[in-house]
Length: 315
Image 1 (cartoon, one colour):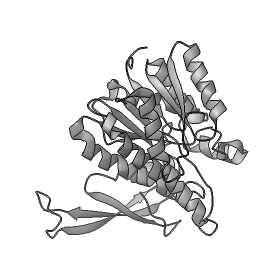
Image 2 (image 1 turned 90 degrees about the vertical axis):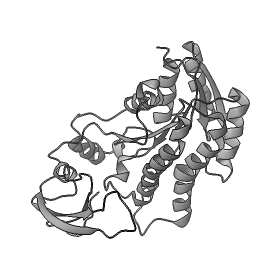
Image 3 (image 1 turned 60 degrees about the horizontal axis):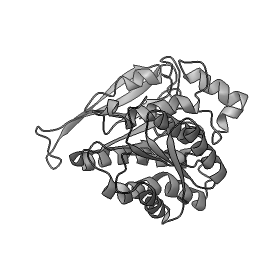
Image 4 (image 1 turned 135 degrees about the vertical axis):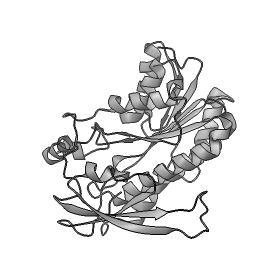
């Protein structure tokens, strides 16, 4: 496939996992891919060699994205290699930390936001001068931003921030012809995921999916490559969930016969945030996450859930 011939792409965190899979997918489509690494120089060079051996074009670029100036240094390296045009940015590099609220340390919290939020933000900022019409930016969100999964509250907060950035970036950069989207994978079997290495983790994952196998990096890499390509030219500002269609009957956070309170705010038209609005609350019985999601129509917010599992917020 040569859909991306003459295109240049940067994939951060591309020495392994989903980043590697995304880089290989983009290379197969004809792009010249820059393989970013933080500490895995040998692994990055192996990806470069794999792409070149298959007849593609690739180079490795290193930078520590946890450092305050990491994104700035990477942008300089990128420009030194490819010049004045970058067509695709996949900000995949990330870090994770499983900890309860009580166990979370300030330094771990700061590192999560430095790598997962600050680095993508400033990398976009620093690379904008060499991006323009028909360029694409893909960020990486997570299922954890949309559902309570394990003890990942700080990590999940970083991915919620990514969902927000996608909307704001897409709105700000749309006039330049730059598309911005995100992919929110479910549980993927990667080096970073210890969850899939336990029987309990595997059983839980398979229980919430319609497809009864663990996701592999290639499953997500193809989605990322699609969003980066011209085939997705009319998609922007979206976070695409790549979660193997969670089972509709999965109990999730809602116990059997839980009550969801839906707050509906009636806004004046045309919408003016400074004008008064009225609201009402409906209470609806739901039996699963899927039932609750069906209630999230425009203008409604699922505010709270109470029943067998009181005090849980829904999203």
